[in-house]
Every structure is written in structure tokens, then in C-alpha cells.
Length: 57
Image (tube, rainbow, N blue to C red; front, side, top):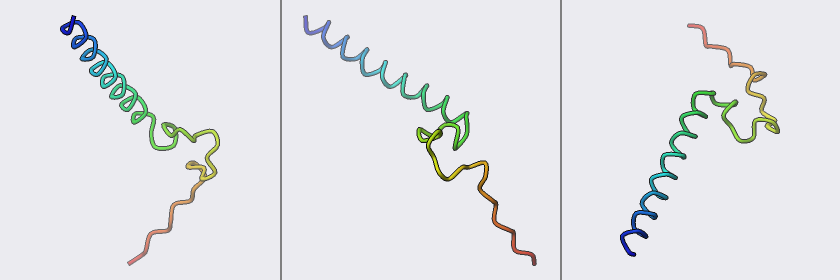
């Protein structure tokens, strides 16, 4: 009985870890703003943010 419970707990823990890692990799491939949870309501608008001018030497 305890072996079955231990196996079930182990499968749940490793399954959740695998799911979390897969989700992280998929989101990181999308990029910073596309992978963000606030993508649809974000007010920063990553595509409209101007890059600062470089200092000319």
C-alpha cells in the first residue's frame, strides 16, 4: 500500500516538474512580450517602445 502511494506521489511530482519545464521552454521561445501573462492588457507595448539613442563618441 505505501509503495503505491509513494509511486503515485513520485509520478505527480515529476509529472508537474516536466509540465512546468515544458511550459517555461514554450514561453521562452515566444520572446519577452509574447510569452508574458499580461500580453493582452499590457500598457508598455513592447513593439512600440522606442529604443534609446546611442551615445555618439
